Length: 336
Picture 1 (tube, rainbow, N blue to C red):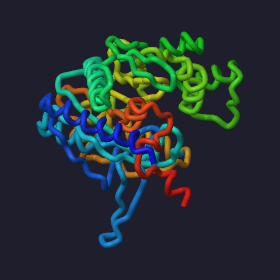
Picture 2 (picture 1 turned 30 degrees about the horizontal axis):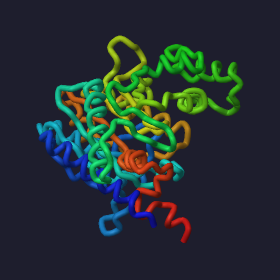
Picture 3 (picture 1 turned 90 degrees about the vertical axis):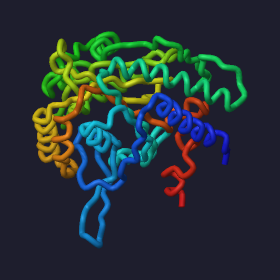
């Protein structure tokens, strides 16, 4: 085993924690066993059972709901570094069944403010890693033979801009299943048996956009369709889209941020719509958390982000395999 790449993950976690503590954020230890969790598009939790009490529990897909319950009670700026889990997803070079997520929240801020913190954070952590390695301080990260400039400002694009530029699609006119099915069919995609919106959106994004993102600097992609973003505040000047960004470094998605929705009724409507969608399409269901919905109605104005710690460590370790920064990856157990 090459311990050096694992040490880089260790240093990354230490540096992340030091950064937020030095900025007076509260660190929260979030629960791993949860009786109910948010129900979001494309996120499916692992389920376990407590035989003694005959109770089902779910492993969290993020620490979000636990943190928001505390924020709604006045905790303020906070963060967690937690293990999270995703079912119905395969393992691969950038994904493990369980992985480490950093999530933080800033009060009275929006997703643009989170983007500013993200740029500062990643560069500062990279400098800390270089110091640990006794290397010269630079803003240039070398990853898989690509030179990536981590200096601010990074690239900013809206999702609509990218769809128009690379796929020649007006995304605002392709927010329903019939619209995107017709568009995909005209572009030669196989739409047989596809009746819903998300699969074709994802195919087009992966095939025509994601692979074409610039790699000389990190990239923020802003303003995602509301149907993919049930926990986000809608964009005031862009109907059908919400205040969300994802960011990529070296072609790898690292984080996902929101200006947080604090309307309980809209959130409940979103969860019920996702429940109905899963029922109609025979997809796994779990009970959503009414306490979480109620707490979101008490949220102060705030924004937050989930960041993949393992993927960030992969960049700093210059490896293209997530198992190089996890001591016991899922693939280890599959080989037994």
